[in-house]
Length: 99
Image 1 (cartoon, rainbow, N blue to C red):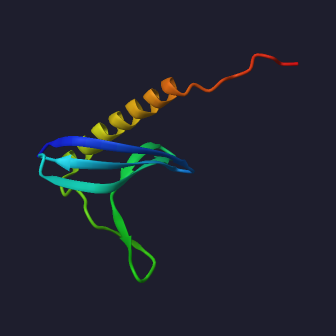
Image 2 (cartoon, rainbow, N blue to C red):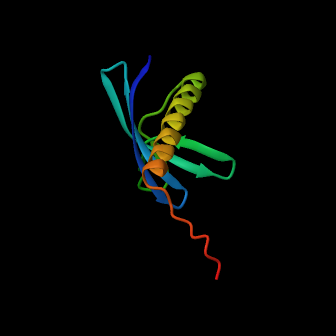
């Protein structure tokens, strides 16, 4: 199974850094993957739904760990491409005037 398309929507809401939608084999879409900045780096959280008891349950997720790792790698690569492109298009002006 191949990830044939990745769409990133950037956010800056605490630990939430963005959302990703992926297309698999040009025939199946998974929306609402979260890009999270955790204590040990960035990771992808699967789409989930809140249960009646307040806990969350993934509604879509990889079964094999090697596919999860591959998916996380390509999504984060695309995320950082988007971040870099946005920074180049909208550079932050830093004043050198220290008076």
